[in-house]
Amino acid sequence: MKKISRPYLYLGVTLLAAVFVLLLEKPTADKKGDVVDIPLLGNLDVQTIAMIEIEYLLNGVRLKKGDGGWMVSGFKTKIQENIEKADVKKETEAPEKWYKADSNKVDLILNILLDVQLSSLAGNNPEKHGFFEVNAVGMQIRLFDSVGKKIEHLYLGKTGAGFLESYVRKEGENEVYLANRYLRGTLSPTAEDWKEKPKK
Image 1 (cartoon, one colour):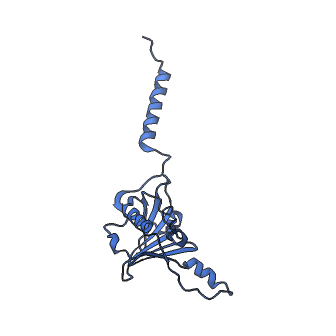
Image 2 (cartoon, helix red, strand yellow; image 1 turned 60 degrees about the vertical axis):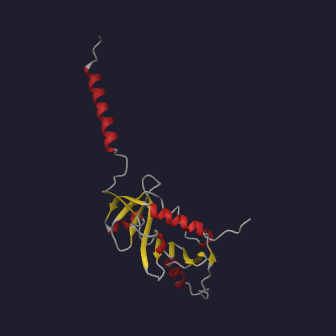
Image 3 (cartoon, helix red, strand yellow; image 1 turned 30 degrees about the horizontal axis):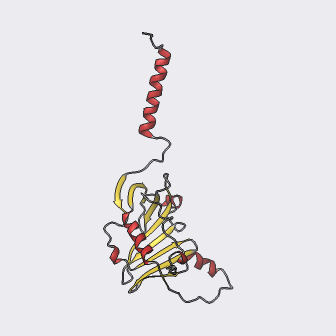
């Protein structure tokens, strides 16, 4: 039987060790923090949610539960208000208009939110909130009960390494978590997207 020369043997062992390290460490992947695996909204009962606000840059939408289902209306975001304050030619503010919303779509989105899991802690440094886009530049969602009490206020940030994940932070907390879903692509801040479409 022919012997394998030592240089080839050493090379083979080195290559095997390198492959083993790559499989275990995955140095090219983003490093994730502590694994938490907890639901985004905890044990929240979806039936207690009576109003939803979604705000993203210049667009804002408000969804309100009524006796006949969900209604939708646009609203001015803080960024939009600040722009208008600087505009001396500001027009008289129009009253809020409500339209019939697609209740099935709203219920679907609420169920999706309830299914979202926070997989790991990404960080807790407030100075990094801008990097994760979980501050004023990120999408915000606020949930209210029937008496107008705020149940939850979330900042929905940019995508994670896997593109199907995204960063999330709760108002008043510094911790930023990686969620198992890209939420900005699920929630629209435009009223037109929530309106009930006429039946053909």
